[in-house]
Length: 403
Image 1 (cartoon, rainbow, N blue to C red):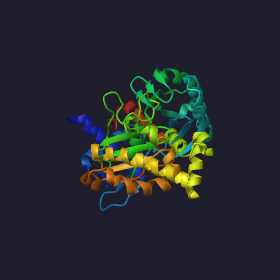
Image 2 (tube, rainbow, N blue to C red):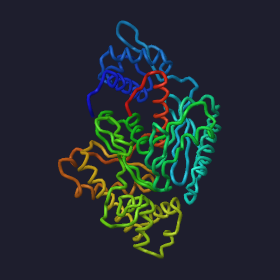
Image 3 (cartoon, helix red, strand yellow):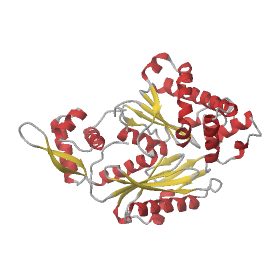
Image 4 (cartoon, rainbow, N blue to C red):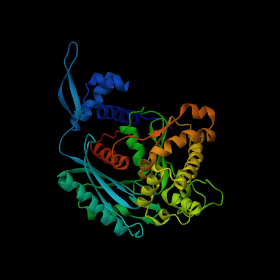
């Protein structure tokens, strides 16, 4: 991880204080020092910075012996954050307060057969302004906006370097989006798995300093990685492309252009291909992705043998892939999320409990927990709102995390 500078340490202290305030709602300085294990002097300095910036305010007096203490909370001023989740079939925008309270959201369907940037941009603009209207928020009240884009994204340039499911290469999306959105703040672009991982770091109830992997299961699949509580980006923000590691040598074609990738067996199109192998005439084979997963869930509920066989094959492939993650990274936790996982979680989790142990080294398996991610309605929009909050903090000269 390299040598930490004084600036790094101060940034991490702000993160710890803000995370605790978000978790507890209100806290005194003493509460924060106890919960974060930071010194009282460090907490006092961080709180002073946040108070001066108007990002934290006093909400009352805390119970104490001797000198009265102030209760603190994240500011409730009417500035708002926007987080956007762009997937292959939808764009969802959510409005958050500065304390990351979810206020409203709006989704727009995207045609997954039309991959032109202008089509995606139109859907994003409609989603954002629809969400603002639902929340009753004027565009001028938006303090920051973060938008996730599938594939490899460079946040510093706002370029979608490669989105395999859309066959995008070097699309300067930020420059095209900002004038269409008509907001007074710039757009932060990032990868959805980075967003989900940051949401887990900020909002999950687990330790903020552990090593965890967040695995997203949907149309595509991927992993977000945090080591010792720090997001891993890699040299070009491309760390975590677990879905494009090889599961089967010379296996199925993958939309990234390679063959045998994890995604080609575990993503929803991969599941459709598996069903076509099991039962080519099954009526669910030709369904669109959302309807297909709904049909899978209905079949599993009814103990349909074909759907049970589909689940077995998919979970076997997933267990192989997760075993590799356990053996490679030795994480404390693997957190599962994504729209496909949410729909099939009831059946997936027991299978993984049975199958993963055979694929992982015993010592690493003994220390890892595999569980659903629970950080609110949509961890991608929450994570992108956190990136937007990071931008707000940076504008005040108060970065809270080097992510």
